[in-house]
Length: 281
Image (cartoon, rainbow, N blue to C red; front, side, top):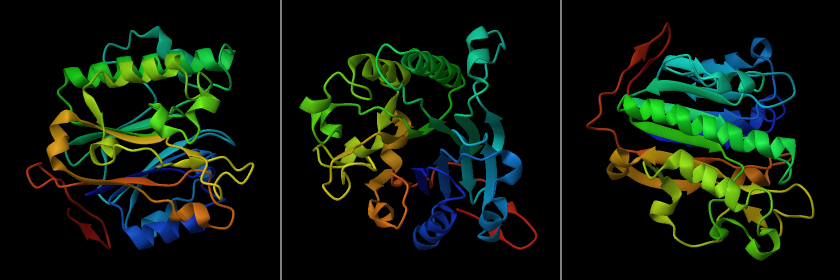
């Protein structure tokens, strides 16, 4: 099963690029971030025409996440939620559409767009850390249920200095601070594994390049888009790849897709049937 994440930086601006990539790669699940569109005008039909189910959680001009899947998702939830509905902190994050989750083929898919944070010490930075703390609590709830988890998306954090083209230059700055890295580690708690680092231990691999200063042409990038999976799934993991080719497109997203291949022979996989298509993994 191919599971991919991609911050597309506007679904309507990049629609043809996304559809072209889907036709080339044929992912089973594609999680999108920064869709930047209200749900009622999200371009659902082009994806359905390719045989995908579409689940969306968006807002005008900012943020927005979506799960595009060949297998119809179950238990789709939008935003943070608590099993006890007693977490008052959740209310703070309802206005920004940054998380959508669903059960697909026995795995809890959690697609996130973590706040950027702007700069250390700012209100936006405080929001980012609080958001990550809420994500950690959210995952605690899933862990209690014994869920197999795939947490993926744009995290706006480089986990280590290996994930920045010039770590000395950006040391302690936004997306590279110890505060952010500690908050991310608190989310993961050792229960979720960085898929990419299972296969690649070295630096020089990026998923985001700034539009400014010819960053892509000079390969001055960051690895801030991640796919984390439950420890129990690591034996099923066959590959994790950053596909930099879409960044070469005309008017590309500043991010590029990251994709894993899971072999799920021993996991119960659902199928679904619609009027025209039948899918089975």
